[in-house]
Image (cartoon, rainbow, N blue to C red; front, top):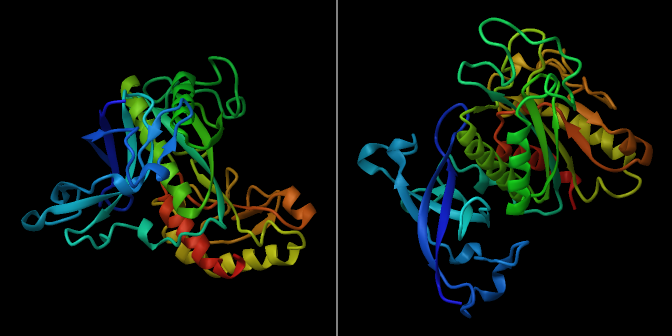
Length: 355
């Protein structure tokens, strides 16, 4: 096979505060899938048999950091370092490349939180990413215009029928594209509020799962562009008696997955309690509007844990409680939280509970 001119979509997080925005640009790169190189054994193969380049052979690429709130105008060059690559199913000969941001001297940029996370596949994570499909008028998709409201919550969660769900075509397309790209999405469902949805994503390794969640968010936003809707990940998109949006984080370490760890489960919850204030600072902006003690949340100023308790900060799944080992669910992260921050805090706080 001859060389191909591949499209590499370099994706990174900018310096916007309090939460970063996604940025991306396309690099055309000549690539020979069959040529025997020093990277040949490090390349992988997609589900449809196409060769995926390895990260090590992808070039760094500069960008204007003064336009992304990451550098001053007189020293504007920043670098993109490829760290994770997957197929781009929506374009021919294309790949999505998650990148870390570096300074011009190739040291980690201050906005580069991924670099602070230890490489440790002992940790397994499952994120539940909630979001709202938003119309151009600012209302969730499926809501009437003006100041009118749909019927109260009750029929929308895992709902069926055009009066109970809205935007399924977007959700289905996102699911299909994620699976084709090789992302480990494990499920989707309509959520408690009309126009609100959730997808779940599992991966082994803290860096790996955060990379994949950002890539899945990127694909969701790109698909939404076509439908001219906005992806709203504010933790409280609609004020009043409507559920907020979270990013629940299910996690376990090797020690947690071993039999006989029931006492350790309590110790882990107490350890998380000791760092609650620090965690909350990094678990998403305006999270206080969501964590009120209502709508399946604990109050942001309190910390609690309990078996099957969706009103707790940490839910201990019934199966984990009965077996004495398994995973826990951190229900505190907001939908707009940076997953790099979330996995960093969990793995760093609980480093004594990992093999």
